[in-house]
Image (cartoon, helix red, strand yellow):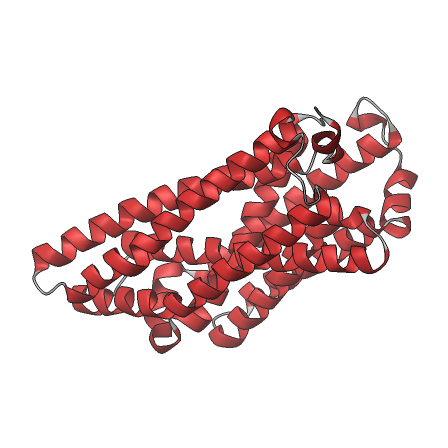
Length: 313
């Protein structure tokens, strides 16, 4: 297993790029009829700038760790310039890194002209965020396969990442809506929340379906149609933890969709609205905690050899 520094950078990169893709996307499909109020709550110009800047810093840190691992040096200061050139021009992960950097610089440009054209800026930022997020598959297990199998694996990994990013972005959107009503009055804020719940209902079902299907495909391609050795290896144990956390997320999401969402829709009195908001916030906070742990597990899994689970006995 590689060092914890690599796991932390991978974890932060996953979270950062998923939010950069998923939050603007949610605004476009979930709050399109209340775009002005949503933009006032989210503060997209600052959010896009900081997220892209953080993404650039994390990308630089990731490149440093990769170069250190490939060159075999013990200190970052020992790295020579030609190592970076070799990685960038001679490896798939290096080319993907360049694409990610270009995409993040594009998001900074979107933040710059956001006030002139908010909708176009958000659409372009979400597209660039999707590209940046997709480049992470080249540092995962899918990049190890070749031919048709490799193409299927990379496609499944990409769809899995994008679906997860859409879910993470929607979670943050709901939390921000509940915490920061901005300049919106109480009644319009309630309408905004109701619109968000309605807007995510269909998309949420599609996201879950994509996550389940691509998760099964990835498992079959990485581990194979077997459970032998899974429970006796670190890789297999982390997979089981991930599955348990995902199941918990599904339960919370189902409660939000079929109980707490309708409760907010039916609320009439101020006390009923306040109670529905508190219940929804608690559920979303638990769901966010679960997805945070899942991202940490995924970052850890990416540093392990999946073959260990197949050979362990």
